[in-house]
Image (cartoon, rainbow, N blue to C red; front, side, top):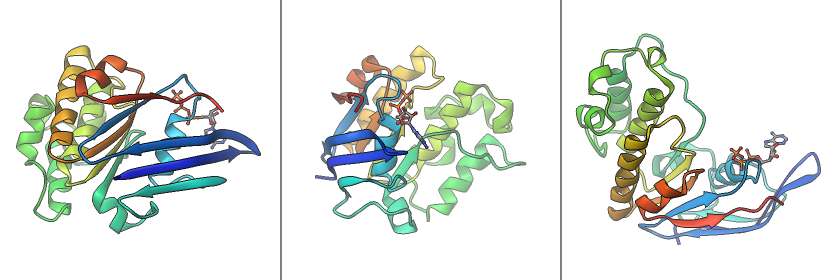
Length: 205
Ligand SMILES: Nc1ncnc2c1ncn2[C@@H]1O[C@H](COP(=O)(O)OP(=O)(O)OP(=O)(O)O)[C@@H](O)[C@H]1O
């Protein structure tokens, strides 16, 4: 198993938000976590990313405990809240920066990412001058350009139009077909199904 969470418990202020949560994802698998607002999907993803202290249970990612350190983030990509954009850098330059930081082995070139994510016409813009959905496309493009083995996505469909959600489903299916593992929180079961995801529902604790 690439990802294994067992009996996870998270508390905020003494109240359990997650209790007895199990989740597993293998190589080449996409797991979509559904559930009502507040069920704890983002919290679970943060546990998998090693960013959320647990009151109980175990979490393993790539056979080790997730830890917020460079070794971990070389294999794992988390796309959650909107990232901070670098002032003065264009859309293309953000992608080039990501490609160069990741040591000459990006999963695709910056130009290819622009095409794949429908941003070719926005290449010279500042990210903050783009729409919400366009900025989400750029977040995803930067995540998919990096070499990785695990993608953790928190509502990746956020702000995306229907046509691009369909494209995202096929991009994620391709990532999994190449051996990657995806866990995503989502409110779009159709997109999850189109990606070939296994759907699990998180009940509020
Ligand atoms: N830092 C925090 N302090 C206190 N409570 C928190 C904190 N973070 C999250 N919570 C609570 O934990 C619960 C789960 O939140 P979480 O964001 O994980 O839910 P979610 O399933 O991702 O929801 P949504 O579908 O709205 O994104 C919520 O009730 C929220 O209020």
